[in-house]
Length: 299
Image (cartoon, rainbow, N blue to C red; front, side, top):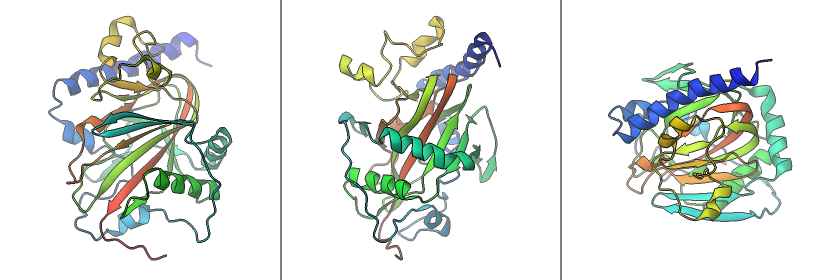
């Protein structure tokens, strides 16, 4: 078993990569389009256009079984953090027993996470170091899909993509990226949820470097504040991470944000990263919503 000193050392090395990235991004990020291409394998192809979804897009959409009956769920709190783009923090998006169940469903399916670059799927732990698992269509999974649709008001022509869990061990991270790579008025990944299922860790926050930080101290329960600096970060390197917002991984809670404007252009403020886990492990759940104008699924 590695010593605590070696764990912190590993976290510090990986964290340095992130801090260099923050400085680059805040300087203007001239190669940001390349970063935006490092997305999950479920992201629909860039070549799709118009109201007709291509087969790869259709394959990634999730539809409830006939007669699905989900129990009523009440969130502990819903807090609007930003309006343009819309960013909402949801306390208690999933219950603790639901989180445990989703983790158990994920366990047999974890494989190393990949990235896509110029149409090629590769492993690159400098960009993304984690494991991913597509969830089986269990009733609880379908009810979470339904909950995500209801939270968004059942927006027309929008469909939840199949859900993926992400597991991060010590040193696990995902560098700065967008959940969208392209979009239009008729198609695109319009929104995202980041749900925390397991958070037995230090570090591992979700960093949005371009979102304005709220002034109210009441937010400090959910985000890293100046006097609550991320665990394990060296004093001389904390300044860069003061830009934007770092959401703490808290079991059951979720961050919801809009990726695309109505005209299909993406929000630069939706740039985000999973910061390195310095100790322990973290499991998150991605819920993405795909917009396809005029599409009627065969049910």
